[in-house]
Image (tube, rainbow, N blue to C red; front, side, top):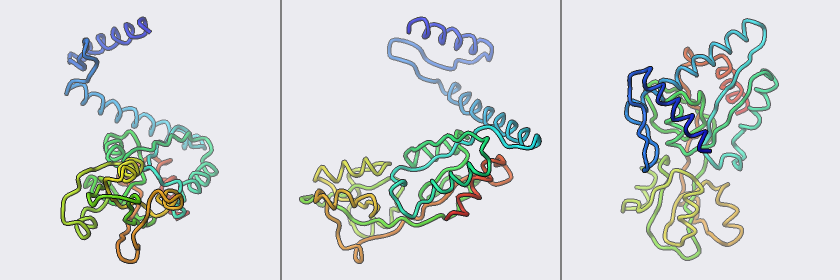
Length: 251
């Protein structure tokens, strides 16, 4: 372990010397990137993405698409019957079997950052402002119902990517807790100190076990549009374009 660390440290020092930049801080307090190091990291990710696109295009000219496609999705989608991501994956693999898939399940804000930094090419995320250049296409809607523990206070928690106006129409006060994942919201609700909106399909397991209860959805509920997000088609790799088409086709 010590030898590996010393090797990495030496390689980093050599890279800093070659670039003439201080990329990281090293010491007893740990390791962290400098501002210049963070910028170099982002640019390196873009460079690797461009190389992957080049590899894909060469493969296409040789008669078969190859390479890797990195996609991202928010958590708790697998239990939503309206989400057909697995069908899209099957269709994509059938059409371009030579392409390796990497799937990242992250929080919404992490997905936004990964997309903007070109760490992924396509994400499935709640309809929300991202970047002026990012394209959004509707896939399906996810019903949200107000859920609380059997005995719960009136303080509410919210997911950071849900629509703020939906909460303000129900609660007069500001949320006292925010999370960026469905699992995080479940922990808050199960504490008995918060109420919050959960997707109806995701809350069902706790409701059926009697650990939560949902208020009348006909009175207190809203829907979140789940979208596919990507940069303009003109900048997408061929494999990403095919995957987007598969997603839209199965939905």
